[in-house]
Length: 211
Image 1 (tube, rainbow, N blue to C red):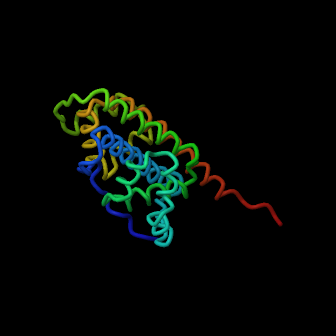
Image 2: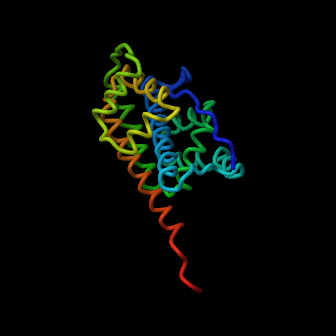
Image 3: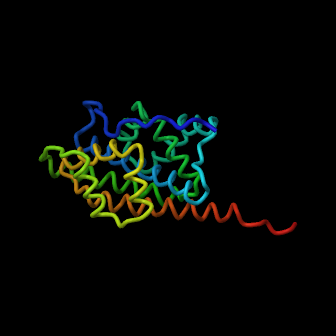
Protein backbone atom coordinates (compact mmCIF):
# COMPACT_ATOMS: atom_id res chain seq x y z
CA UNK A 1 0.00 0.00 0.00
CA UNK A 2 1.20 3.50 -0.75
CA UNK A 3 1.28 6.45 1.60
CA UNK A 4 -1.63 8.79 0.73
CA UNK A 5 -0.55 11.55 -1.61
CA UNK A 6 -0.43 14.97 0.00
CA UNK A 7 -3.45 17.11 -0.79
CA UNK A 8 -2.74 19.94 -3.18
CA UNK A 9 -4.43 23.37 -3.05
CA UNK A 10 -7.60 23.41 -5.12
CA UNK A 11 -7.90 25.94 -7.90
CA UNK A 12 -4.32 27.16 -7.93
CA UNK A 13 -3.33 29.86 -10.47
CA UNK A 14 -3.39 28.52 -14.01
CA UNK A 15 -1.97 29.32 -17.43
CA UNK A 16 -2.73 32.74 -18.87
CA UNK A 17 -3.84 30.96 -22.06
CA UNK A 18 -6.76 29.35 -20.22
CA UNK A 19 -9.83 31.59 -20.08
CA UNK A 20 -11.33 32.69 -16.78
CA UNK A 21 -14.34 30.49 -17.52
CA UNK A 22 -12.13 27.47 -18.23
CA UNK A 23 -10.16 28.17 -15.05
CA UNK A 24 -13.41 27.97 -13.09
CA UNK A 25 -14.29 24.72 -14.86
CA UNK A 26 -10.89 23.29 -13.83
CA UNK A 27 -11.48 24.34 -10.22
CA UNK A 28 -14.91 22.70 -10.26
CA UNK A 29 -13.43 19.41 -11.51
CA UNK A 30 -10.84 19.53 -8.70
CA UNK A 31 -13.59 20.30 -6.18
CA UNK A 32 -15.85 17.42 -7.21
CA UNK A 33 -12.96 14.92 -7.28
CA UNK A 34 -11.72 16.07 -3.87
CA UNK A 35 -15.20 15.83 -2.34
CA UNK A 36 -15.83 12.43 -3.94
CA UNK A 37 -12.48 11.18 -2.61
CA UNK A 38 -13.25 12.49 0.90
CA UNK A 39 -16.59 10.65 0.83
CA UNK A 40 -14.93 7.51 -0.55
CA UNK A 41 -12.44 7.49 2.33
CA UNK A 42 -15.13 8.13 4.95
CA UNK A 43 -17.40 5.49 3.44
CA UNK A 44 -14.66 2.86 3.37
CA UNK A 45 -13.85 3.63 7.02
CA UNK A 46 -17.54 3.32 7.87
CA UNK A 47 -18.24 0.12 5.94
CA UNK A 48 -14.84 -1.60 5.94
CA UNK A 49 -13.09 -0.21 9.01
CA UNK A 50 -10.27 1.49 7.08
CA UNK A 51 -9.45 3.45 3.94
CA UNK A 52 -8.17 1.50 0.94
CA UNK A 53 -5.04 3.02 -0.62
CA UNK A 54 -3.80 2.33 -4.14
CA UNK A 55 -0.86 0.00 -4.68
CA UNK A 56 2.07 1.96 -6.12
CA UNK A 57 1.93 0.24 -9.51
CA UNK A 58 -1.76 1.15 -9.87
CA UNK A 59 -1.02 4.74 -8.83
CA UNK A 60 1.65 5.01 -11.53
CA UNK A 61 -0.72 3.55 -14.12
CA UNK A 62 -3.34 6.17 -13.19
CA UNK A 63 -0.83 9.01 -13.53
CA UNK A 64 0.79 7.71 -16.73
CA UNK A 65 -2.30 7.69 -18.91
CA UNK A 66 -5.27 5.81 -17.53
CA UNK A 67 -6.90 8.78 -15.80
CA UNK A 68 -6.28 11.12 -18.74
CA UNK A 69 -7.86 8.60 -21.10
CA UNK A 70 -10.92 8.31 -18.87
CA UNK A 71 -11.36 12.08 -18.46
CA UNK A 72 -10.52 12.78 -22.10
CA UNK A 73 -13.85 11.37 -23.22
CA UNK A 74 -15.73 13.99 -21.22
CA UNK A 75 -13.62 17.18 -20.96
CA UNK A 76 -12.48 19.71 -23.60
CA UNK A 77 -8.91 19.20 -24.78
CA UNK A 78 -7.64 22.52 -23.36
CA UNK A 79 -9.11 21.79 -19.94
CA UNK A 80 -7.76 18.23 -19.92
CA UNK A 81 -4.29 19.46 -20.93
CA UNK A 82 -4.32 22.02 -18.11
CA UNK A 83 -5.33 19.41 -15.54
CA UNK A 84 -2.81 16.79 -16.65
CA UNK A 85 0.08 19.28 -16.65
CA UNK A 86 -0.75 20.86 -13.29
CA UNK A 87 1.25 19.95 -10.15
CA UNK A 88 -1.77 18.30 -8.55
CA UNK A 89 -2.46 15.93 -11.45
CA UNK A 90 -0.98 12.88 -9.65
CA UNK A 91 -3.43 13.46 -6.80
CA UNK A 92 -6.41 13.76 -9.16
CA UNK A 93 -5.34 10.67 -11.13
CA UNK A 94 -5.09 8.62 -7.94
CA UNK A 95 -8.42 9.93 -6.71
CA UNK A 96 -10.11 8.83 -9.93
CA UNK A 97 -8.65 5.31 -9.90
CA UNK A 98 -9.42 4.98 -6.18
CA UNK A 99 -13.07 5.77 -6.94
CA UNK A 100 -13.06 3.08 -9.63
CA UNK A 101 -11.50 0.53 -7.27
CA UNK A 102 -14.10 1.44 -4.63
CA UNK A 103 -16.89 0.40 -6.99
CA UNK A 104 -17.94 3.78 -8.41
CA UNK A 105 -19.45 3.43 -11.90
CA UNK A 106 -17.17 5.78 -13.87
CA UNK A 107 -19.25 5.52 -17.10
CA UNK A 108 -22.06 7.12 -15.07
CA UNK A 109 -19.91 9.41 -12.87
CA UNK A 110 -17.68 10.99 -15.54
CA UNK A 111 -20.39 12.22 -17.96
CA UNK A 112 -21.98 14.02 -15.01
CA UNK A 113 -18.59 15.52 -14.12
CA UNK A 114 -18.12 16.71 -17.70
CA UNK A 115 -21.59 18.25 -17.84
CA UNK A 116 -20.98 20.04 -14.55
CA UNK A 117 -17.66 21.46 -15.80
CA UNK A 118 -19.31 22.65 -19.03
CA UNK A 119 -22.11 24.27 -17.05
CA UNK A 120 -19.61 26.08 -14.85
CA UNK A 121 -17.70 27.34 -17.87
CA UNK A 122 -20.88 28.65 -19.51
CA UNK A 123 -22.05 30.33 -16.30
CA UNK A 124 -18.75 32.13 -15.75
CA UNK A 125 -18.69 33.25 -19.37
CA UNK A 126 -22.08 34.90 -18.80
CA UNK A 127 -21.21 36.44 -15.47
CA UNK A 128 -17.74 37.81 -14.68
CA UNK A 129 -18.75 39.90 -11.68
CA UNK A 130 -16.57 39.22 -8.65
CA UNK A 131 -17.33 39.48 -4.96
CA UNK A 132 -15.01 39.32 -1.99
CA UNK A 133 -14.33 35.88 -0.49
CA UNK A 134 -15.75 35.65 3.02
CA UNK A 135 -13.81 32.82 4.71
CA UNK A 136 -14.62 29.22 5.57
CA UNK A 137 -17.40 29.89 8.12
CA UNK A 138 -19.71 31.17 5.41
CA UNK A 139 -19.11 28.08 3.29
CA UNK A 140 -19.62 25.73 6.23
CA UNK A 141 -22.98 27.42 6.87
CA UNK A 142 -23.92 27.11 3.18
CA UNK A 143 -22.87 23.46 3.19
CA UNK A 144 -25.08 22.73 6.21
CA UNK A 145 -27.99 24.60 4.59
CA UNK A 146 -27.58 22.80 1.25
CA UNK A 147 -26.77 19.23 2.27
CA UNK A 148 -28.79 17.07 4.69
CA UNK A 149 -26.98 15.79 7.75
CA UNK A 150 -25.24 12.51 7.07
CA UNK A 151 -22.03 10.83 6.02
CA UNK A 152 -21.46 12.98 2.93
CA UNK A 153 -21.73 16.33 4.72
CA UNK A 154 -19.76 15.10 7.72
CA UNK A 155 -17.03 13.70 5.45
CA UNK A 156 -16.57 17.08 3.77
CA UNK A 157 -16.49 19.16 6.96
CA UNK A 158 -14.15 16.74 8.75
CA UNK A 159 -11.83 16.16 5.79
CA UNK A 160 -8.26 17.53 6.02
CA UNK A 161 -9.02 19.04 2.60
CA UNK A 162 -11.90 21.18 3.97
CA UNK A 163 -9.94 24.49 4.01
CA UNK A 164 -9.01 23.92 0.37
CA UNK A 165 -12.59 22.95 -0.50
CA UNK A 166 -13.90 26.13 1.17
CA UNK A 167 -11.30 28.26 -0.64
CA UNK A 168 -12.32 26.74 -3.98
CA UNK A 169 -15.99 27.42 -3.19
CA UNK A 170 -15.08 31.05 -2.51
CA UNK A 171 -13.24 31.38 -5.82
CA UNK A 172 -16.14 29.83 -7.74
CA UNK A 173 -18.53 32.25 -6.02
CA UNK A 174 -16.22 35.14 -6.91
CA UNK A 175 -16.57 34.12 -10.54
CA UNK A 176 -20.36 34.25 -10.43
CA UNK A 177 -21.14 30.56 -9.86
CA UNK A 178 -24.11 29.17 -7.95
CA UNK A 179 -22.08 27.30 -5.31
CA UNK A 180 -25.22 25.87 -3.69
CA UNK A 181 -26.09 24.12 -6.94
CA UNK A 182 -22.57 22.70 -7.22
CA UNK A 183 -22.87 21.42 -3.64
CA UNK A 184 -26.18 19.75 -4.53
CA UNK A 185 -24.42 17.98 -7.41
CA UNK A 186 -21.53 17.08 -5.08
CA UNK A 187 -23.96 15.59 -2.55
CA UNK A 188 -25.52 13.42 -5.25
CA UNK A 189 -22.07 12.29 -6.34
CA UNK A 190 -21.07 11.63 -2.74
CA UNK A 191 -24.14 9.47 -2.11
CA UNK A 192 -23.23 7.47 -5.20
CA UNK A 193 -19.71 6.93 -3.88
CA UNK A 194 -21.01 5.79 -0.48
CA UNK A 195 -23.53 3.41 -2.05
CA UNK A 196 -20.88 1.97 -4.38
CA UNK A 197 -18.48 1.35 -1.49
CA UNK A 198 -21.27 -0.25 0.56
CA UNK A 199 -22.24 -2.52 -2.35
CA UNK A 200 -18.63 -3.50 -3.02
CA UNK A 201 -18.14 -4.26 0.68
CA UNK A 202 -21.28 -6.40 0.78
CA UNK A 203 -20.13 -8.39 -2.24
CA UNK A 204 -16.68 -8.92 -0.73
CA UNK A 205 -18.08 -10.20 2.57
CA UNK A 206 -20.64 -12.61 1.10
CA UNK A 207 -19.61 -16.27 1.52
CA UNK A 208 -18.76 -17.97 -1.73
CA UNK A 209 -20.95 -20.85 -2.86
CA UNK A 210 -19.27 -24.27 -2.71
CA UNK A 211 -17.64 -25.25 -6.00
